[in-house]
Amino acid sequence: SQQGEEDPQALSIQEGENATMNCSYKTSINNLQWYRQNSGRGLVHLILIRSNEREKHSGRLRVTLDTSKKSSSLLITASRAADTASYFCATDASGAGSYQLTFGKGTKLSVIP
Amino acid sequence: EPEVTQTPSHQVTQMGQEVILRCVPISNHLYFYWYRQILGQKVEFLVSFYNNEISEKSEIFDDQFSVERPDGSNFTLKIRSTKLEDSAMYFCASRRASPGEKLFFGSGTQLSVL
Image (tube, rainbow over all chains, first blue to last red; front, side, top):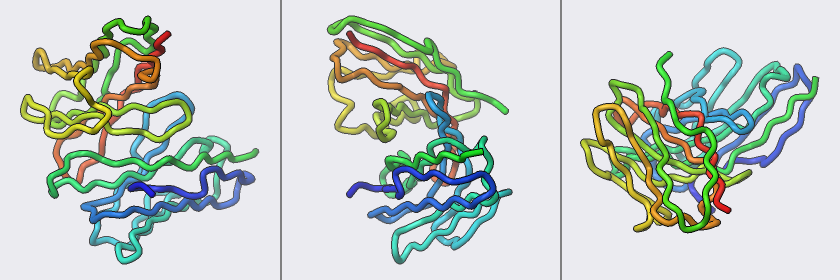
């Protein structure tokens, strides 16, 4: 599999429920970032977690990082219809000879009102 | 908040034609990127640019592709002879520093090669 693989590929929930998306990666990272993409639009940065952090919160978002398992999860609490979008994790191995962020395939989240 | 701007938003071209996609990164950013996304698929890295030269490129970024920063503000992606499989959304992105900073993305240019 490739760096930054999210699962599930698609997730459909009712408004008010929590949504959890997972990401696995293969190589060492400097940090891991989550982005959101509304249909046909650019990606918007949501949250960044560094390799020495285990958990981070931002509003209704909670991100965890387990570097021993090379995995991360994004939890959106009390989801809203406006949260409907695709969510991508991106690994940042910058500083190890690479300047890029590597994106996964994304999780398409649908929040039903 | 400052924005990365991309033009045009849509570009339709014939196979074999050259296209230039334009981007204006955020003014104090130092690292510039092109990514592409084929409909419904992952966001793929094409190239990164720093200090007026390519710092990294992917296998997708072959001899048909080139990037340029012709002045202090614009950052362009040129595809010399487009193929059908170049049809995708192309995103420009920039960030102030690397590593440890987020990327700011433009809204993208939808390229359709006929």
